[in-house]
Image (cartoon, rainbow, N blue to C red; front, side, top):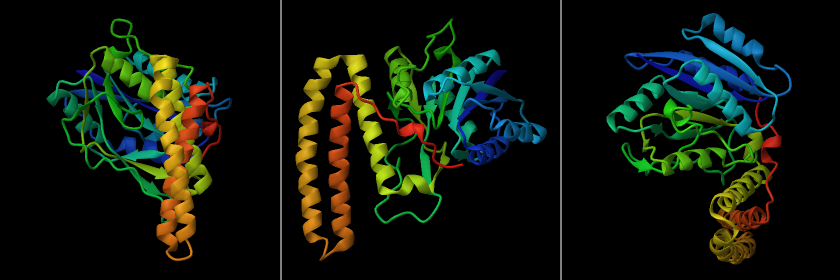
Length: 313
């Protein structure tokens, strides 16, 4: 009988954690499997322990709570891995605290691994705005991906993987503690893929992400764009070397600045005539320029402090 451990990392968002755990409590357990839950709080204080205790009182599954006081997402993820290994997990699932699952989520991921002989299964994340979103905001879409598509990427907001990826008898992988600013999950699963792990996409394994109001402002949106770009470039420098990364990222960044600047100016000129269309054009330009500056920052070792601010509650 296979044992699955679901891990949830959280930081200063007890209300979101409570909703995430409530959805976990409604999950369908795959046939022939047992299930446990691990919550890792990445903080200096046990702010969410009472949430875990309330869940424990009614949960159909055992739950373990850990406090990780080394601040940073990879530290929390690694603590979760260690706790899951301590639970003798054969499979480890990961979910973010700002998400909730559909009841068949885990079943679909597990069936995907079995059907396609995969070590990792990942699925789509549907974004739902906490408040009425601005007209320029568009949720992420995975509509072009199909079940059975093999990939080199997976993300910790919706994933199930074989514990052999992290056990000492297996690949003994861990999240890179240098990547506290983002891209730690991209790095982890790409290293797993490079060492032979099969990663499959399962379109039916859906989770819902609640996007807080604070992330729906233009400044916060662009801060996230900058973070993703700088983290991706910095990761390339670490894994591929500076020269190769510079040769690929510099020309691309210069093109983005030129195109982005043109779009911002064009949008500003047409704004009095067609406001919404002009704003969308200007936003595309701002995104392009922000990605370029993020990439240049990553080339010189600059990173983002995006995750130092907590969105949601």
